[in-house]
Image (spheres, helix red, strand yellow):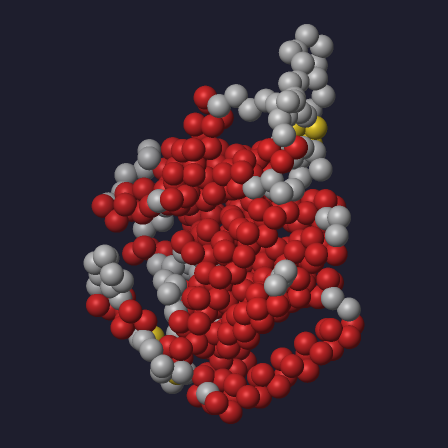
Length: 410
């Protein structure tokens, strides 16, 4: 709901606030995210033409709120996050929240606490079925979900926590902050196998493959050695969980969840032939027919047809170009490492879109769009004044240097 408020503030600022700056500019990230929003809004509007039961109608409303929240986060970040210090603060808060979630999951996996014991939090009421908090097992081991809705989401969040905390462990300004970031990185590494999820492993490998380009060969070799030792220690401490994760990876061809995902392709194909352009509409796939597709691209095809796939493509391509833009605007080694950390996070999350319904989960979706906004926040393109247009006004004229706004073009 805070993200929805951000969307309202962004729209209000565009409508009633006159933003006069030294240089007129436009952020390509804003164009991408607004294009994504319009495409999603089109599929939602077309979906209203299809009748559905109460579950489908409620799902459409939730999906629309999720889209508004995601777009609102990006627009607000693009409007308010302007300096390297502000970007560091946003990423620091993100790292703190992710590390806390990983800590709860690790404590749960070792039996120190249970997530059920901390619900409901003071001032809140537990509003869910008892089955929602029930433990799920895989290969004889309990899957840990931490504070996430599902173990898969938890594993992806833990995976992208690793490059972010590694960045702060290397470049944080204070010694105790670097130490806490290193502890957070270790906690995230311990949390990934606790979820017993192949998707988390894929996200971790993808993220580290991106982030390693910011490191030297010596550091990469040291990281491999430390990782090998950590895997050995974890297998000794929690052999059941380690064996379950290994069997899940090696036995994918016979896994029921994998067979269920491939079995959904026939229903998706029929829907695409019947509704190729707009699909069934945003949030319009009946759970009784499609269950959980565990593939965001198939979900986009069912709910949005070619338009839905175009929306997903816009976010994916926009994220890659945002990564390139952040690298281009990096002027110091620290900013360059930060860009690689964010690129590793967003590529790691997007790599999981082929193995689970990414945008159906709130935490990982908001993390995706927060990083998207921060990547583009450092980049803008100047717009030259056209003949006959009023000249640009310098709002910093007469101000004390401490109170002047930074230039849009960096």
